[in-house]
Length: 577
Image (cartoon, rainbow, N blue to C red; front, side):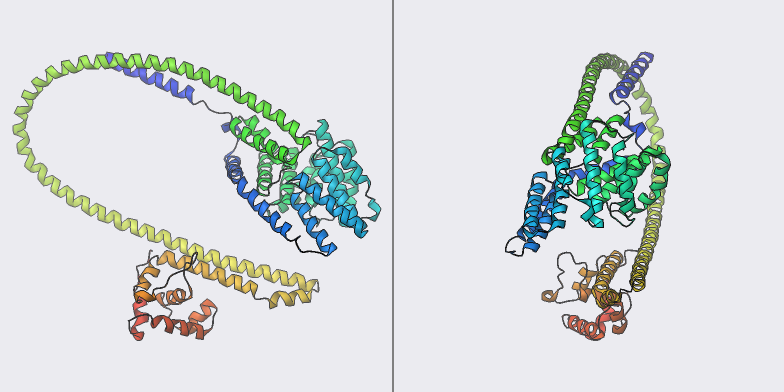
């Protein structure tokens, strides 16, 4: 037995060695927190839906293009083509430039200088984004800042900043450590005089002005973060704000928050089909440094595909270089894995030889045990006599144990039902408090909105806002939906049970997506013990006559006498709690 023990111990140690080296710890696990890892998983999910987002984008563009048909008014045509430019501006550079040129020609024909200036700014953006920096500079030089409106002045400086950053990216001079170069500082200084805090680009330019100064970055973070935390991360402005906040955190040394908001910026870019994507490139570089090569390769491949689709000369070279380093690292990792696999094969052969020796040894021991079994059989025969005497006692104990087990099962089942009931009650209470809180919040938001409009003397807006029934209709629909969900959690079989009271040809069939309809909802209140039509009409926000007519109509579909119908409904179903 000592030899067998030695063989088993040796085999176990070799298998532990194999497992430890077959699944080495990754560098990634030590660098990425759980929160960041979860955000990366969310980013992977969004990338998996990129075709869905792109189809939605194309469908929206096709709808806008159809609006061009049959439109003869030049100004109306201009605005539709302008909207198409904005849809294409970060999705398809060729199409965006085409619609910018169309708008430019229309502006010249109409002799509208503000339109001409706007299109020159838009064309400069497309040229800069695709690496045609000279053409971008020529377009923006045609714009006279002295004749621009306040809003277009902001766009003018934003285009100058965009051209400057892309020039230095193209030349490879700027970096994440010093993103602002000397000739960019006057642009940011000039913009600070013209940009109000309410401007959509305020956070973007505030971030840029703070990138080279740690103390300014610390002061700017709360202002930008306040805006970013209200974002849904689904449009370009929100992507830009999250990117700016990420780089402010990077400047202060908070790398985790910097990476977190960079991922959120990349998620926003993916959702809106931004082909002029920057955030995901930086995410890919960081993930590559963290050792997650497969994920980094997926990200950089997506970025390179977007850059090629968009014809972005600025990004293609840099992305290709990063992809080369990632591919080289993957190749090295693959070679290392191949070497390890070769070593593991040798180890497995050795383990197999040891196991064959162990089997032979065990077979020999088995023969020895077989001879000893004969001796034990004789001893067992003597013991059988004693076993018979104990058998009766064992049967009695078995009967007692069976009864005890049945009692324990019943007790456990009762405890389980009580626990489920308790949990369900707590959940329904939480749901009701949540619904009440939501209605209070919405009412407070409505109050604040009315107050702001009154303070701004926008009395016509207040009149229109309070006149429109759309808000209350929306709240009633939400009330119905919440009531249906909670009621069906308590009485999940209510609809089926209620249909048993009706004649077969009169059974209620719900439409697709409906949980309850008006008829079922009224009798749901009856099931809850509320039989007064006036109270039901107040709960459902409808007329008493509607409730009365509906109840009468449903009662006529049943063979149960009218005076007994309500009491039968109240006895339907067993609550799930």
